[in-house]
Image (tube, rainbow, N blue to C red; front, side):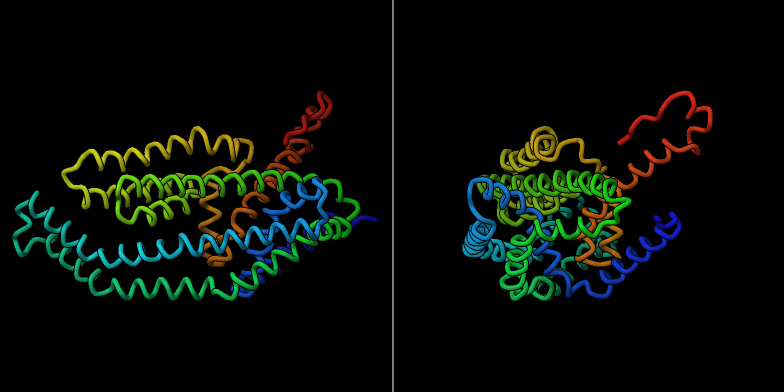
Length: 361
């Protein structure tokens, strides 16, 4: 005999509360396992395709791991040193940029020469603060990054976790399927399939968009001669998954740097602005429709809300799980709405007698 609905809801709520409690208490501990699991999830279709080509699961996992390690080494040797040097140079140049901004403002607005001017005092304080805190900020950012993404975690633990989870992925899915409540297994499988479709379409597609746009921005900005172009492109590409924020932040940073570097050379400044205009056009009309699609069901506002809430509650780990949770909740909400519209509470007795409800997905 199946458990009453009230009892089932109670047990599912307890399981959800335990999950959130574990995220709060063990966030830093489970971080490498979350990253490894995410990478295994992304790479599982590749492993399945290699298996269809004739490789065993062990051979497919080994090939993927070796290629991934090779790419990581190439990135570390070719891109990371330039990125770090440009970031340090940008921070060191911040005081000079502030002084040039102050000079530009005084030139255009002579009334700022008044020593009692609030704007002049504020600009002077900003410049002094940047000059005093620039080195400390750089060191703090580097220390935080190293403490969060330690070399041991991402060089040793994550690849090992990814390898074993990718190797046993199909077995884990089969085991979880075998543990489903028999009365609800068909519905759970259907909902899990919809969640997987939404999540894979969004995450894999959006990551591809981020990499493509970041590469485009970094390459074109460096080609037009913008200093720190690699840093600006990396920042713009990394936060492209937040709708409109990547282009706004990257564009403002790039155009601001171009104004100081190319002041008077309006062609170069226009090229920098045009790069982000082209990037936005490509993202909105080519990349996102082709790679992400319109049937994912993750509204930009819902996504930003999930990132904000989970980021504030669970920190970096929360931001990692925000998108999967948002996708799952979107599917569950649509399922709940469909159940409500098929119920007597929505249709009434006359509605059920007149016509069968449609299957609203």
